[in-house]
Image 1: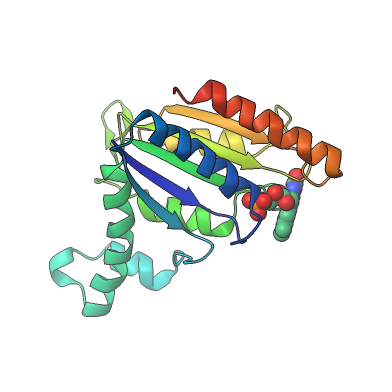
Image 2: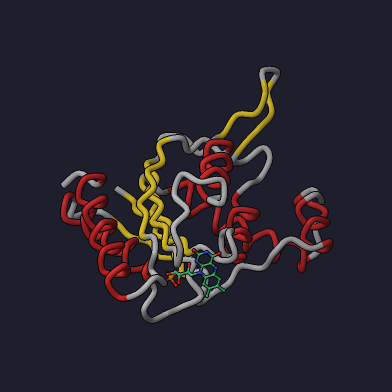
Length: 200
Ligand SMILES: Cc1cc2nc3c(=O)[nH]c(=O)nc-3n(C[C@H](O)[C@H](O)[C@H](O)COP(=O)(O)O)c2cc1C
């Protein structure tokens, strides 16, 4: 089994979303000690976003790209290869201003490539990253689960499904900024959800 862990907190120390993602990965490794793990920390190594030069590179046929264009596309190719090889993907996702961290959005922009990770058919779009199990560890200062203010879950569900990843399990740690008791309770709840969600 190949596990791909994507951390997207800006924090290297004390990140709750990374802590939860680590716990999920730990349980997966307990169940399969032979599992291979790849960790990509988008906070430590942010992926470049889409700009005009990048779009120009992506839409230039490979044989006609300049060296700079080929190098830029290769950065995205590496992320696509990582997720294509993964059987299980674990995302650590803080809520920043009601959305996902910008580096995670850049990662999604990098892995969504027409003709490679999705395609359009006569019956509509088809995601090509199939057969994967996805865990998403959410960390929030407030409490937004199942409310319209939670834009993260609909967004991630939609874009992951668009790319073929429909087996997605969300784990929530909410209320982390609402005092020490609330933080303890949030983490305990999230760890219990992980116990239930990740088969031992
Ligand atoms: C820049 C910034 C923006 C934030 N925006 C929100 C928000 O919109 N809603 C919320 O509930 N918490 C918000 N928080 C709190 C974080 O979601 C919370 O601290 C979370 O634990 C951060 O993830 P991490 O522990 O993995 O770094 C924000 C925190 C930061 C630093």
